[in-house]
Structure formats: structure tokens, C-alpha cells
Length: 349
Image (cartoon, rainbow, N blue to C red):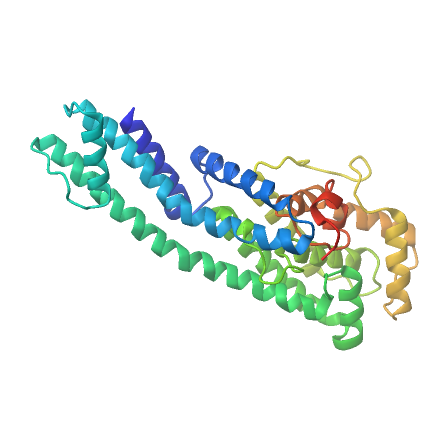
């Protein structure tokens, strides 16, 4: 039993720190799930979204900080059982030897050769755990920095909160819609980056932006909606990079959702699978961007069908991720979460 506990703990550490792909560890799921429930309960005591955001900002850092002690406790427990099975009759003495070995304190010196082998292996595992955590943090914060740089730059182009409407209007006024093709390629690469980092380093999903009104998931939704509107309704030459950006986006969000255990349609199609955007909202947005001078296609009905056909690919998973990370208010994404009013409190941002 002690050996099983140690092996399962090592699997959790390897899947978190070493394995260059996502692997679902039952121990990690149980630990982070319980901790998330604690933070959810505490955040519900807050009256405004800003206070809840400030509370939830500590969830991922505290979760990572406490993960190492949890592993240490489990390894110490596993080795305590193995020491007891190796002939140490007293549970207290077995635990004392395990703790001394894990923390390399040298308080207890075993006489048996095989017990000494266990002691050395436990001390080695303790040092390896610390080394892995130290090496893991720079990688994680590097990925976080890359993610947030794009989110901050989007604010200049799409407003706060970011919207597809504002993004198209600003590009039309400042740079010209022909510059969108370069932007789609930038965000295609961004989606590929978060797919890798947020799947392999799953706590990245819960690291919140430095400013409470910004979020990586609402930024992703604004870019995807902008690309979908451009392809379906804006009268500009067809740009394959917009299609590739949408595909990279919904594949990234789906794969992140899979590792979080979120259910969503595997192969959705409109109108069999409805979307959360109403036709009236779509028409209102088109009227506003048309008033701003953006050229639109004449056939509104076909534009709606095309937009819904793109949106259905990421609609469910986008809203689900917004709820999981308690995203700030943003049109066409977090504003239509099932528990939006409860999560947002008395303010939207």
C-alpha cells in the first residue's frame, strides 16, 4: 500500500512537471477540485465582481504552492507504511524516520541495509520534487507573459471589454480592414500556444489577468467573433487566414475543455445545434458597424447563416470556459453564462 501511494504521487508529479503533454492525474483533479470549492465558497461571500476576482486570483498560485507539501505528505505516508512493513514496529518511529528522510534532516539513522535503501530513495525523491517545482515556475510564467501580452494588445484594438464590433470599427478607421489578415495569423499562433501551454500546464487556465476587466478567454471570444463576422458579413476579399484563425481557436478551446472535463458537442452544425447569439443581436451589430463605414454584404440572411455556422464550432465551449474561470463581463461570451448574475454580483466589471 505504501509503494502504491508513492507511485501514484510520482505519477502526479511527472504528469504535472515533466510530461510534455497533458495527462489527467486523479490526485491532481481531486486536490485542485477540492481547493476550487473552497475558493468558490469564499468568493461567494464577496458582493462585487472585483472582490471575487481578487479572491480567485490567489487560487492558482496557492494551489501550486500547496501542491508540493501535499506530495510530501503523501510520500511520507507511503514510506511510513513501507518502513513499518520492513520491521520497524512503532508507527511513531516509522513516521519519524520517514519525515527525517524526506526533509533530509538526519534525525533517525536506520540499522537495516534495506531500510537504509528506502531512506536514501525517499531523500532523493524529496530533492527531486523541489528541483522540479523550481524548474517549472519559470516555464509557466513565461507562457503566462506571452498570453497576457496579446490580451493587453487586443485592448488597443477591441476596447474594454473586447468586442468584435469595436475591433472591426477600429481597424476600419485606423489601419484598414486589409490589415486584418496579418492579425488573424498572429492570433492563430496565439491559439496554438495556449493549446499547448494550457493543456500541459493546466493551472494556467486559472491564472487571472493582472487587471480584473481582462481575461484570456473573453479575448479569445472577441477575436473568434471578429473573424466570423469578417468572413460572413464584411464585404472584403475572402481571407483564408481568418478561417484558419477560427479553426485554430475552436480546436484550442475544445482541447483545453477536454482536459478540464467539460462536455460539448463533438461535431456541431447549425441549425441543429443552436448558438447563444440571437439574430436580433447579430443584426444590431451589423447596423452599428455599417454606420461606422464598414462595408457589408447585401444578403443579411446568408450572412447570418454563415456566421452561425462558424460560431457553432466554439459557442458552447467558449461559454463553459468563461464560467469555469469566472471571466469578467464581455458581450457575446461571459454575458450569457448560465450563472452570470450570481457570479458578477452587483457590477459587470
